[in-house]
Amino acid sequence: MDSIRIVGGERLEGTIPISGAKNATLPLMIASLLTSDTLTLKNVPRLADVTQLGRILGNHGVDLAIAGKRPGQRTSDGQTFHLTARDVVDTTAPYEMVSRMRASFWVLGPLLARCGEARVSLPGGCAIGTRPVDLHIEGLKALGADIELDGGYVVARAPKGLAGGRVAFSKVSVGATHNVLMAAALAKGETVIENAAREPEVGDVAACLAKMGAEIEGIGTSTLRVQGADQLEGTVHTVLPDRIETGTYAMAVAATGGDVLLDGARPDLLDNALDVLRGAGVEITASNRGLQVTRNGGEVAPVEVETQPFPGFPTDLQAQLMALMSLAHGTSTIRETIFENRFMHVQELARLGANISLEGDTATVTGVEGLHGAQVMATDLRASVSLVIAGLAAEGETVVNRVYHLDRGFEQLERKLGACGARIERLSG
Ligand code: EPZ
Image (cartoon, rainbow, N blue to C red):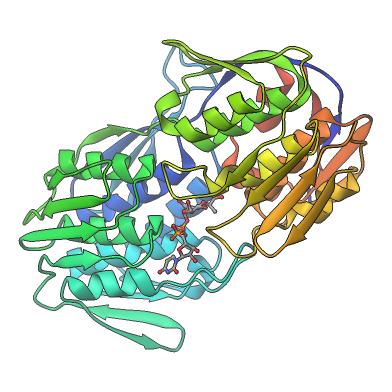
């Protein structure tokens, strides 16, 4: 299993290109199930999760063609995917697939809408919490689906097709919003989704569905009104930039000190996180190229943050912020309100010398003078990258094991950081 070796202490200087968002790419790829035409996605990142979903969709009959490199294209430019589900050949998503990637559960709504039936394995728990799917099921039932659980599978039927309905989510869920939104795009009549997730990735999927022929009002708000189409058409859509990758590199610069242009980053996608970083003493300037992030010597100030659905501070940046706050001048509190067990990075950060105490959903982080390198390992994507940030700022050598977590969500991590002066390399083994 590969690992990443970092020798910390270098300032980061230069330019980091921001990739297309993983968490928009995955549902956009799934949206290809809704039409027999070709859906072309541009700016697709090279990530293990994207490859894996391509395989999963292949089982349902989606033909994926990846466009070759064009002259003048840089290695950092995203890929172009052509996805065509001429015929859906299988409406079952088996356990072996769904258990490997939770987002693949989102095929449920599109398969049901297009084929009138779907049998999708329950995704099960995972390292960051129990993560149930009750909201997905309630939402699809409101569109007329008949749903039962059978041997670990969600079995959904709508022999006469789905019909629009009113879905009022009791809790904000990104995945349930994607699932119901995609199904509503092919349901008969109007669906109103209340308390919808407002994450930019939901907006990106809605914008793509609108180009495919669904009428959608309220994109970017918590009430989505969808007029379903009898048939959806193919379109061309460019995946929006990855706000979590952007925030992650901004925190890396904040932790090490330095001056980096995050090329292609969109500040409007991470408003609150940028405010938090500014509050911590990091200089952030938006330009038409992206975001310039600078910290020259000054101390990192402590913060008080709680994770919230968008536009609040994202749970997907909580671990990275904790790595940064380990070096702050003072005590920070970080409360995780989205997932009940997303603190796997705490004990690993402690191996690097961080001083963090946990009580319930709140971490108290007392900044230390400096971190020191160690062998570490993490069990989820964002936790792993928080260890990379801490390793970049630590004195000496850090080895982050189980790199496959990073490969799921960060494109060319070593190359991007290495180009800005970080001493970072992949060790194969
Ligand atoms: C998406 O997961 C993201 N994944 C996650 O990113 C992200 O952390 C999360 O949204 C929150 O922003 C992708 O986009 C692929 P949720 P999702 O449904 O959709 C509860 C990463 O690192 N809930 O918004 O699975 C749930 O348990 C990943 O890229 C129910 O109770 O998250 C949680 O507490 C990790 N019932 C909360 O809602 C349900 O039916 C929010 O989860 C569904 C969810």
